[in-house]
Image (cartoon, rainbow, N blue to C red; front, top):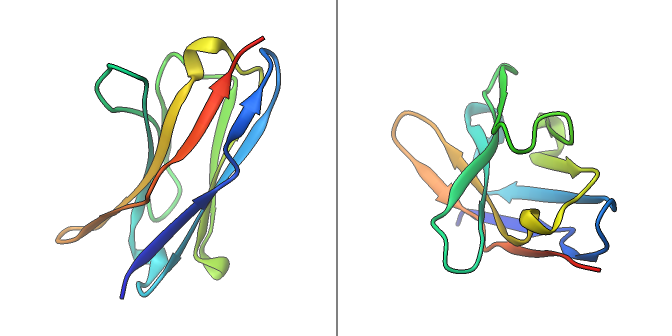
Amino acid sequence: QVQLVESGGGSVQPGGSLRLSCVASGIEFARYAMIWYRQAPGEERESVASITTFGPIKYADSVKGRFTISRDNAKSAGYLQMNDLKPEDTGVYYCYLLDLVRSYWGQGTQVTVSS
């Protein structure tokens, strides 16, 4: 059974930091690219950062210089370090794993940035 368990969300003030984690089980994690998505209230889900199986990384323009995506294949885990958070970063953050034939979503973790 495949599971993706996300953690690390919470409420912070603007300028604060959070580190999201996504731990996978039931799959060979190293084979999958990983994307972090977020969905703000009333908005569509959007990609914020992605990392392939061998490392190339992309960021949405809105988070460049503030967010860092990483992975530890030995731990079957991916991370999203979020610094200098802004109110517009508020939303539910999801990790998404995909290879050529399969894809899996995490359950989401809430991030709220507010003063």
